Amino acid sequence: MINRAWHETHRLGPKAKLDERVAWHIEHAQVCGCREMPESIKAELAKRGITPAERRR
Ligand SMILES: [Zn+2]
Image (cartoon, rainbow, N blue to C red; front, side):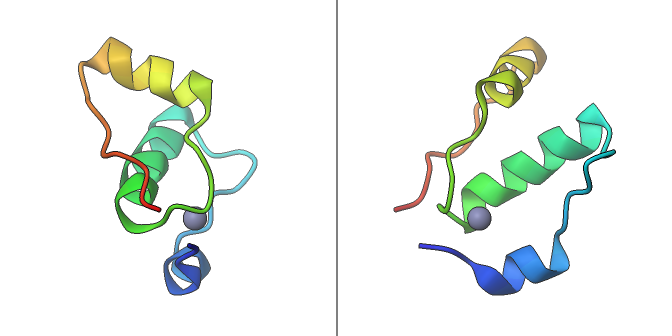
């Protein structure tokens, strides 16, 4: 399942900062299930004590 409308309005550029990437993936996991959260982001969330939503299917 891909949430195209959300992706159109939430573009993550290649130069996005880590904070932006983390925030993007947290929101993405809640609204769209097109791809798994990268391990690097999961590790960063764990470091920050954040438990992300389960991937939607
Ligand atoms: Zn998506």
